[in-house]
Amino acid sequence: MSTAVRLSILLLAGMLLLSACERTQPVHNGQFMAFGTLTDISIAGVTPERAESAIEALEEDFAIMHKAWHAWAPGPLTRTNNLLAEGVRFAAPPSVLTLMEKSRQLAQQSDNLFNPAIGRLVKLWGFQQDEIKNRRPPDDAAIAKLLHADPTMEDISIDGIHARCGNPAVQLDFGAIGKGYGIDLAIEHLREMGIENAIVNSGGDLRAIGSRNGNPWRIAIRSPSGSGVLGFLHISSDESIFTSGDYERNYLWKGKHYHHIIDPRTGYPAEGTRSVTVIHDNATVADAAATALFVAGPKDWHKIARQMGIRYVLLIDSNNVAQMNPAMEKRFALMNKNQVVEVSEPLIAPQTEKK
Ligand code: ADP
Ligand code: MG
Image (cartoon, rainbow, N blue to C red):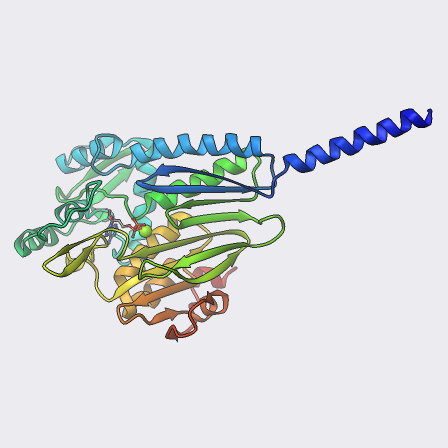
């Protein structure tokens, strides 16, 4: 081989290498609206073209899920709710059936503090609409009536693909779990497309897999006052971080704020908590748990977290104290050094002891 030929082969190889490097960006981002909030996808370690087509595929997935689990726009869930209220036996749509089954178990583990059967209460409070407007809260009597009817997931019997409900007060609202399950399905789809390093983040609730080019993903946790960052969490391999806060959806009436997380024991917005952040390996469980622990409040979150198998909890109570279990405190990089922190007893969940 002549020197000239050898040189040109070397040059060509160099160019190919360069173009491969240029084509592999460390992190590629894409955004779209889903579940009424901005969803942000970060993908690392693949070409921009592959990342782009994966993001397009996820946007389609989310649009389908949004329709399937919408609590008030006509679709599979509203149809299911009508049939549940009628008390007839019916073939449940597959998308709704899976969430019913998952919800049933999580409701039970949370002593029904996570209770997606309270759709009528959520509607009564005015949270089943796109725009939350300042309005008069419902009458005590209307709340008491729904509370007395005691709707729970236990009222629904599931037999194969068939369901029947024995309590006409039951109406499903997957607002506290749908996003989590959607994120789990999105991660599954990314993996099927050969993507191993990514974050699916829907309005601050997320699941991250793999790494950012070999480094852990760094996640900012918003302060419950709505502005600024409370601290950071690093995650690698595969974990979900979910937060439920009173600042997400609320309205003002006569100087008092009413938010969208309802305590199924009282029928009123849960008191004593400003926000709860949990880390768990599964987004569906993390979503339901963040809501359940918010309702459980400063006194009971520890017990409910153990029952639900949650190992990392941060709860900001209404006095602005950051309550954490020791494992969370170890991982949480607090930004504000004046933040009051209370560290609880360790959370050793029965399920995780076996790991
Ligand atoms: P976000 O939607 O802000 O992420 P959550 O995951 O806590 O917050 O979900 C709150 C939504 O869940 C409410 O808008 C309502 O649709 C529904 N919901 C309210 N209270 C409960 C509850 N105790 N159990 C289950 N779902 C609830
Ligand atoms: Mg939730």
